[in-house]
Length: 392
Image (cartoon, rainbow, N blue to C red; front, side, top):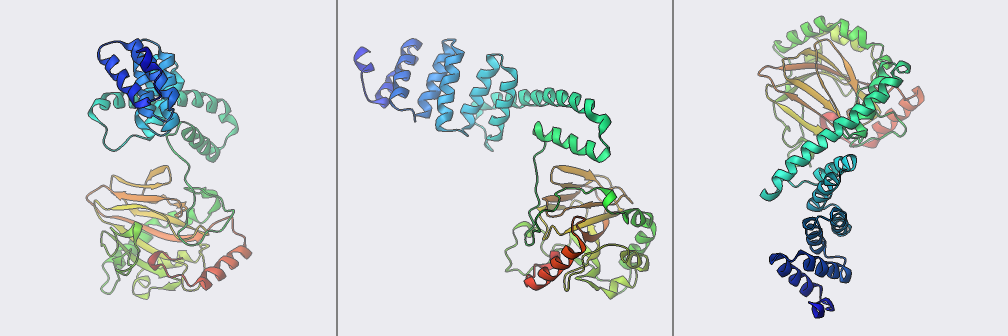
């Protein structure tokens, strides 16, 4: 043993440590592994073995040093992260352990080895409890400040709380084509910026009557919402390209009324004149009825330009229909309109066995001045991009 401890061969030292551990001589195994990592600090497995031996000897602080050595080699290693969290828990460092379990779960592989499954489930429970404890503390702080917050400020403060405890994460505007700098990024925008929403909502019943009329009209045009050439690099739209699970009845497309449909919808067309829609030659404004089939899912995707926002007016909403923008998920309610930024990742689901129908219109981002709107319109029109049905 003494002569072996003088060895400069980490592999030989580790092999001897394995033999010592197998015969129950944990003290010798520890000494050999400490010599091993002293010679070669890049041996993550040696660090983990040292941590396990120290834990077996009841020296949790040394076990923490060992697993930290492994993490210095593999900072995102699922196993060392999991073991570190467990050691912190055993040391009674509750808050640190809860956070560490979250770090480990963030690196969890799709398939967890059978011998780690019980510990992984324990990690999920411990992290969930940690999140709830932290959220309770933050709720107390938020309640103390609530008297000075209006409704919108309260919602943003609640999202701040959820970001802190990592129930949610930040999402940002990521348009596929046109990004105008300096515009506010909000998943769902405040109603106060769009005074015409109330007028639109008040007309829900006659707009629905327009939809029913055009749906049954002899020459109405109902087509897949997503239509790209087969050779196009579809990415986010591969599953829905030319798929009739998501269809549209266009009323105004690229700034041009679709006469076959628009002539059946007088109320809706008249209301569109009161909206501040983007006027862009060949691209906008746009307005349509959007029909999502039973069981259909619109996958996460991003829109074309953050200079425009999108308004939904729900007309037919069966149960189990939801819409997610960024980290916020809402259920549509008939007659309750909202405006959202479609350049923030969003998706939709019709989990029912019936059709879901919306009126969809676009509008300018409220941060754009009249001069900026003119500049956006001119440059997008001059860009030459042609990105199919979503192009603004």
